[in-house]
Image (tube, rainbow, N blue to C red):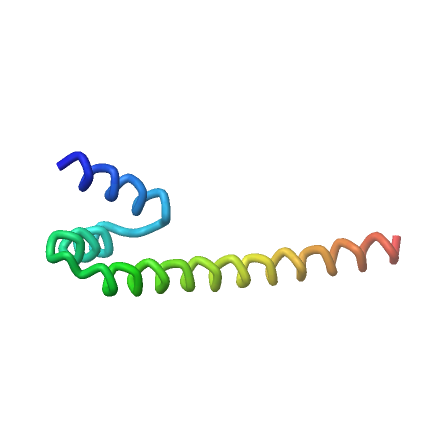
Length: 72
């Protein structure tokens, strides 16, 4: 039980929603280690995509700030 609580807390901290957490805990209960690894890799890929998207938005803002500063 404690292991499930620790896994749940870690998955929440990793940005997983309730559906994903239930799915992961089921895989854990069924001893499906390879499926768990694939699940975690997919979540990691998703987070990296979000990070790159946000970085692009920041880059656009930096460009606009720089353009405005040069023109003033």
